[in-house]
Length: 112
Image (spheres, rainbow, N blue to C red):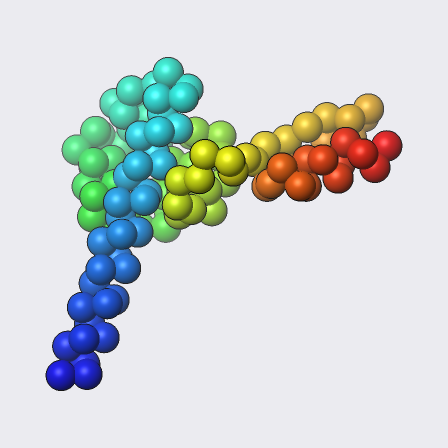
């Protein structure tokens, strides 16, 4: 019984992760005004392959291609959606900084 319960928990975590990846890819595409077929073309794959990657067991290389085409970190595809989260780059003077939270952005801005 213990193994069945552990397997059920593991299977649910995988299902949740697949859902998070798919939601993030769709959300980022929408924010950028891209359709999924456009993203697939930029990744060099056909739309059904992108769909399988989003809702199945994608290879890391496929997720890396998606992240690169969307201009985001691969990590951001795995993170649950949080409306207050932010990530990006900011140029201050001649330096470019990467930030992954509001706190990091504020630190960069206030450190000047």
